[in-house]
Image (cartoon, rainbow, N blue to C red; front, side):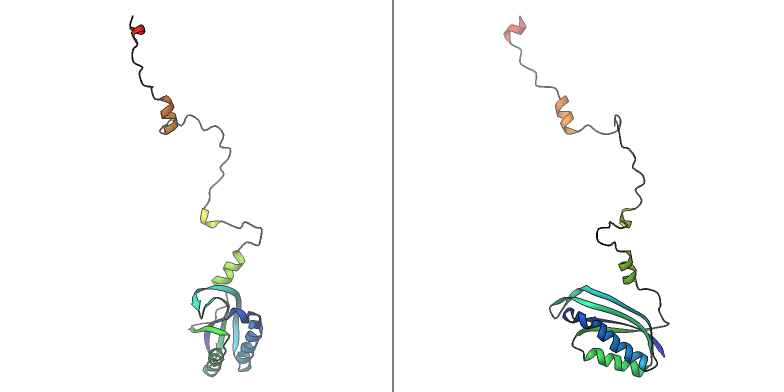
Length: 163
């Protein structure tokens, strides 16, 4: 028997039927001495592009070990199920047991109300008390400061001042 990775996406209106569909596919696989190594329900996600004017779909990933006859039966079930928008079956060298990157991402997401880790910001270190920043003589003066320090226009000498 060979190892396969199967991903199928289901129309969002049929999302509540996904558990029943998965159970039917599981029965098909295990009924013919196949094995399911990994089964992940990714839930409803945004599609990269609309399919039949649908923008979201329910994703399911399975890593299975089956013979060719069972794989053909499974593919036939995908093709003739109107709820399945797309499916992809990829042959694998060995069974994959580790969680997929999609599931690792789900576990890393913060729950409602939590801020979570902002890994994109890097380590900012302790900023401490910023307090008095000193003279800052290394910086150029601000434009408003320059305008305030600029000399005013010389006043013309009046005849009274000349005497």
